[in-house]
Structure formats: C-alpha cells, structure tokens
Length: 201
Image (cartoon, rainbow, N blue to C red; front, side, top):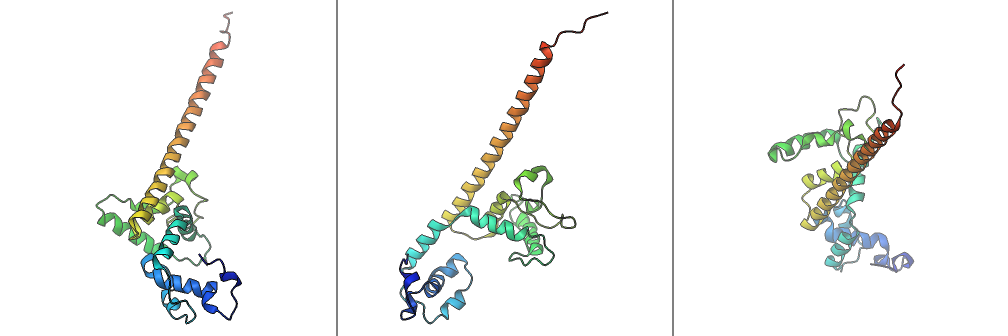
C-alpha cells in the first residue's frame, strides 16, 4: 500500500513505515483486536489521513487462517519451563470448561488437550509432567478460534472452511489407510490360495 515508505527519509517521517503502521493500528486496531492502539495514538509522526476501509480490506485479504492457528498452537504448545506465552494455559482450560457449559454441550472442552488416538495430527507431544496441560493441533486451534473470538462473519466463515478442509483431509487419509489394509489382506489371501495344499503322508 505504501511502496515508497522504505525509501522515505527523516525529512518526511509521516511517510516512513513505522509511523504509517501506527496510523493503521490506530484506524483499525480496536476493531481487529490488535495490540498497541494506545501507543499508536501517541505517535506524533503518524499520518493523520488514512483510508480506513482500504486498510481493513488489505488486512482481510492478507489474513491467513492457518498462520493464525499455527501461531496459537505454537504459543500454547511451548514445553520449556520458562516459556513465555501470550495465552495462559490455565485460563484457556477454564475458558474451555465455561464455553462447554455456555454452549450446552456443543463445544467439547477436552479438544484442547493432547489426544493419543489422533497423535498424527499434532506437531510433537507434551513432555512428561505436562500431559494434563492444553496441547493443540492446528485443527483444534481453529476450533478454539471459532468459539473464543468475536470475529467478523467473513473471517469466521474462512475458519470454518479451513476446519472442513482439515476434516476432509483426515477422512481421505483414513480411507487411504483402510484401502491399503484391505489391499494387503487381499494380497495375502491370494498368496495363500496359490500355495499347494500339504500332502498327506
């Protein structure tokens, strides 16, 4: 949106990227839930006239559901004892329990924990001692996004579409594995049927 920002010198600070960013955050930060709105407003060098709708449109076009889900997953799944998380795991667990009650059972609060039966969906697994702490896959992170955030309908729809894609991929993998097992069983049966019958002495 600002191709000349990188080449703009100190003579025109309002045309530089950091101050333009402040103007963008001030314009749409509250609506989009961005951090640093107060700091952006205190930037005296920010440009004062911004096309707010253009900023919103650009943000939504660049919005990548998978990247957001991966960021949430990566933050929650940190295993270091001194890990500094944006998302508090105890509060996430408390929220999940409250969300399940508020939604009348339509939300499963246990999806935020590692599921050994679906280990293939995760990137790694909890370390010993952390088994009862939240641990997300990309799919469960997107399900949390759907229920946790008051997001715009178009963004919510994008998240739902990604969840559906993940589910479809999981179903395809399961079908492929089942077909592979059936093919293997068939081949074994064919080989056995071709073996000569043992002769009686």
